[in-house]
Image 1 (cartoon, rainbow, N blue to C red):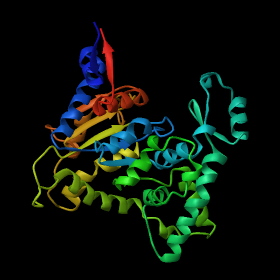
Image 2 (image 1 turned 120 degrees about the horizontal axis):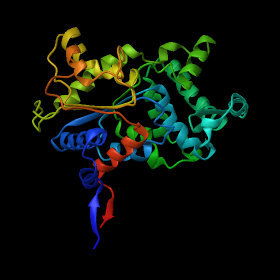
Image 3 (image 1 turned 90 degrees about the vertical axis):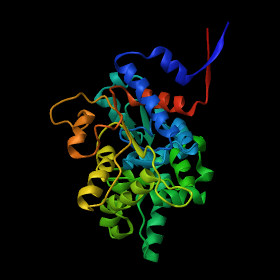
Length: 340
């Protein structure tokens, strides 16, 4: 006789020890944090947008289970690239056996390989470039300035790209974020294709760098957004108790380093009271090692006043392209599985 079981039930049935246990415990704690009224920030490094994380991240945003995002400039733009050029992406399952000549052929075809897939230059970069360039120039003409993600929000909400969609818009996490005006920070945005393109136009004198708000302004913006999300408010407008804002880190690098600093910065630089992070989980395959921030254990962050001894902390040493979609599906509880 078969019965139905949820993804979360499956985790509790199968995952008992070692890395699997960390996977299960982190998922249950994530759900508990949300169920208790907490909010969640996702810090996203790597090439998760090219890996189609939007299939599960977009529904998480839509269902109000993600409340803020910190991501690299590459993840920001590649969510849109997947939307407009999905059919033109190519897969390379045999990439491990490529020669230098094989990759040179990919270059000459106008493709930019990311492990086993490639971003098509003409269908992705060159489709978005003239549209966003017009936004930059319009902002300059009007004396306006915006964050990198706000220019994307303007484009996605204006339907300028709608007739160019090749991917499923329900799988574009940035489109879903735009609909909700989700707080986003993009530290080091210049380290991205469109960031490089913007710098080139600035150097050529075609647009002013002043139209782009900076990383320092992103931190100032995050001060306010962190306080809003970590405190919450009662119906009367007063701050209320609750689990606060959680921190869910995919990979390492600046997308994680930048936002987690907001707590000690508010405390020591602004000299204001601040609520600590209410949850911490990092999914990374970075080996724990001397001097490695991405490989540091979470309790090291206690010494920097980023986390406390009371913060639920988890490290899942695994491939985020496998772990994250499974965790998100368990939390979304969209599917049931048949079991014996």
